[in-house]
Length: 432
Image (cartoon, rainbow, N blue to C red; front, side):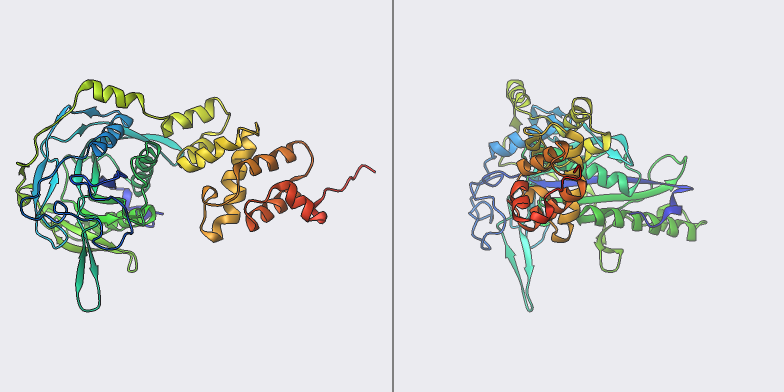
């Protein structure tokens, strides 16, 4: 994905990520309003989510539980006492003129995730993660703008990495690893097109061997891995160019901290506003909410409910099923595909061949449709049947590929039905 290969020779990029994930709770963070994407504008609102005078927030227990699940999944410390704070800012989609977040005492501290970058495992450190509520959405029409408050108050977890990322590939691999964990614990649908997973990335560069950090640019609201890589790559190159064009100028004055957006049509980052600092938001403890107090037994009970996580599954696939590290990573990274794979294994023991059909043969046929296997009506049992027929010598590879073509064209059809309907695919007995 990187287009500026030369820019890493004398310079070291320093990248930190803030991932905002909408939790898939039944209701919003501080009210009983329905938490559901795509409903009629302003149909899931109440006095609380529109900040009418006298309304008071009540914390959603399900949101707290999902946040704790995530923290435990990345080996974090769950802070038994955390606190909500007000973050003041003024924008039409923020009805209270402040967001309720956790600035001083977040619920999650530390932790790490492991991601695969260029075939190698790399550990990425987490600074902290906190619970907060989302803003509404502005919708622009030809002559006016409207505000949809359905999203206002939806629970978010913001996951803040340490500035330990150094390349665009590492950034996207880290985000993919976080996404996989969230899906495995069923904390979010992580639908980037609907905005339930969004990335803010902080980018700075410094000379190799230099201590301390230079000024950074924050790129807001990225919602695809490809754009994330492109935006980081562009921003690294832009900053290096600025410094190299101004070698005699104090670097503190070469680049002013600012917030940018990524313009995918132009392939550049564009300034939105000068960067705000913490004191611009006038943080102070939320007076309408008591500190959030958990017990260790509550945390321990949640720990017991954690499912097998992506890295654990990946290691099991290598050690117990004999898959290659790449096959294991590919399958385990997508929970739906991993579940699909394991249904196949109930009726077929040839793990490597099953993996090949799930990773290469069928995705290649489905690519033009923009679908993944779990999104189709092709049943995993039918793919298992196909591999079993190959292993038994009933059909050979060329016929199997033709059968797969028919299974894609008519989802739900079995390999046996394909052969029955297409006599020309019946294998000939060459032994005569």
